[in-house]
Image (cartoon, rainbow, N blue to C red; front, side, top):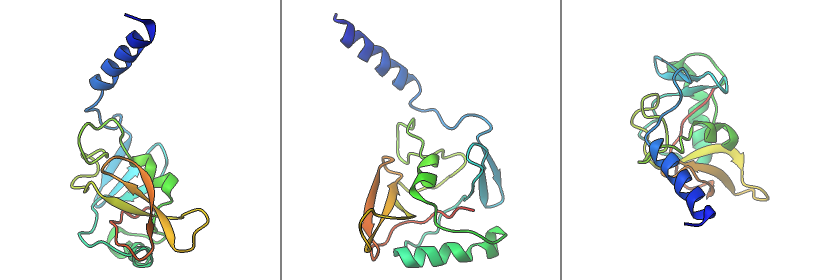
Length: 147
């Protein structure tokens, strides 16, 4: 067996062993309707609305969730913020800690981040596979707000 193949086999075994892992203990603090991320210091909306939104409507939705989640300053996350809650160790969809974020659909979620060089598209994060891509602002995607 050559050395490269052995290294690849060891990596595969290590990945398989942790494939069903979730976030480290203490990473998330769940409160009524919210999840506090102790690593990034961001507070997330725990449940996602069943309605999907075009980008501008998603921003409006997030600006108004303070009435139910408390406080002001709720908004769409940047793609860098949203990618921090993707759990790439999940072996099944969705790619998120389903204990902290139950019932998260494995779909695209809007971010506040415009697509580079475009006035008509913005970035989204897929909780189906953790990828980052773009959607036209008129398309509808899921929303998870951040504070």
